[in-house]
Amino acid sequence: MSNLRGGRLTLNGLALRLGVPLAAAFLAALCAHVAIDVAGDYVLAHDTYDAPAHGSRWLASIGLAALACAGLWALVRATLAETRGSRGALRAALGSALPLGPLAFVLVVTAAALPLLLGMAWLDASFAGIGVDDVGDLLGGSIPLGAGLTIAFAVAAALGTRKLIAFLSRFHRSIVRVVEAFVRLARLVVRASRILVASNTQDRPRVPAALVRCTRANRAPPGPVAALPVPA
Image 1 (cartoon, rainbow, N blue to C red):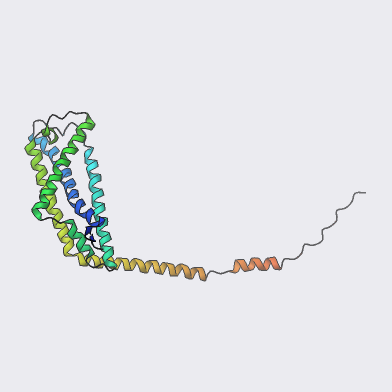
Image 2: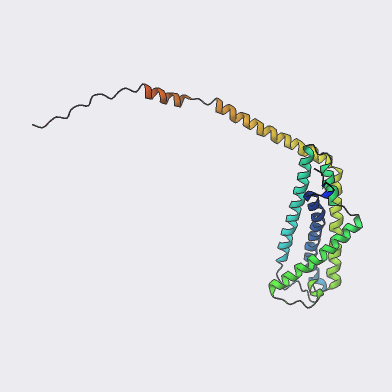
């Protein structure tokens, strides 16, 4: 299964191409949100992340988990397609996950992580009924601290994501062989279970039905009914 069909990007390839950098941005924004909250307690006189509850972290975690599951499912589909004869499907899927160079990928993840962090802080303030005076309030009370930590985590998330994709690409043949062996084992187990069920069904004794027919055929007729005495 190629990620290009008729010159167009398939849904599998599109999910990886958009989902991988977005997942890295979610991870960077989530880590930066926690780091700004912790660092602000020590280096800032007024930490704007202290007052509101941080329900946005749960939303960001759900978004990150959904993107990770979608990417994993796309890779699983590509791997299964390669086990069915579509050569190079997994490698093509991994290639579509990183269509950009290292610097461009870092810039894309950073550009997505910053608005995600600002959105998380705005949601927390809105839910708590706290007013936002400027962008600094959305960055923990300090633009250099908030922006610096967000950029640092975005760079780390982008580089880590590229390392992970490169690792999977390097061992994609081994991954396909492992999955292929697992699929073969699963098919053998299913085939053996079907054979076992069929043999048990054929060897099941039919004595109960035969006994019922024999009993009905050889049932003795009812004996004469004794007449009741008539009172004098």
